[in-house]
Amino acid sequence: MTRPILQGFLAAMVLLAGCVQDRHKEAVTRIATPIDMSGHWEIDYSRSDNLQSQLNSVSRQVQREAARRSRLAEEGRGFTGSPLPGGRDLVTLARLAEIITEPALLDIMQDDARVRVKRDNSFALICENDGSGLTATNDALGVQRCGWDGEQLFFSLALQDGLDITHRLSRGGDSDSLLLVTSVETAAARVPLVV
Image 1 (cartoon, one colour):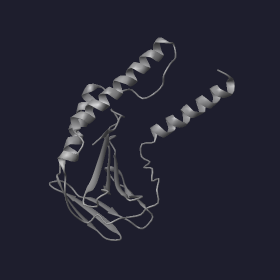
Image 2 (cartoon, rainbow, N blue to C red):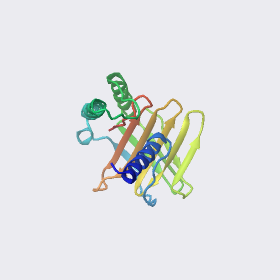
Image 3 (cartoon, one colour):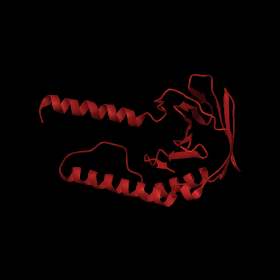
Image 4 (cartoon, helix red, strand yellow):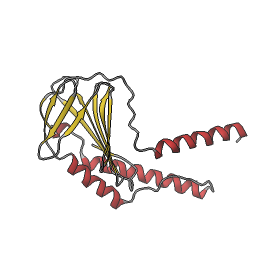
């Protein structure tokens, strides 16, 4: 490899490592265009992701990465990166995702300055918006962010113990449905489980 190519490669790897390590930054990539999500919503499990299939997908991803790292080691090329999660970590992550996504009923109350998502038999997600598109709160539990990313409402919780939970809500194309995507990630298993 020529020196400029090697330097460029190393610079790219350093930048990527920096991006991976900063878990508290939520990328807001689009201009906030809040839409009305008010109403009573029920989870349609027939259209929802299957948690077991998501767990299987993440397990295959981890196995592929382990095989890739093994090949690099056999070729004498080192690899630096975070440790891969074990099977126990992934199962724990799946159980946690199941508990977090358990509520089947959502009641959303919304006005210009506040959105409250009350989840059946669980705590409410509340976002008070000052018009900037992003609200951040630091408290004893960790960092909580919420706001609008285009037409998606997001809630991001980065808890002190290394647990990251992100909820993204948007209206379906038919406007009669609400889409909810939840991502759960822990410090031990840096691969997010998305349901």
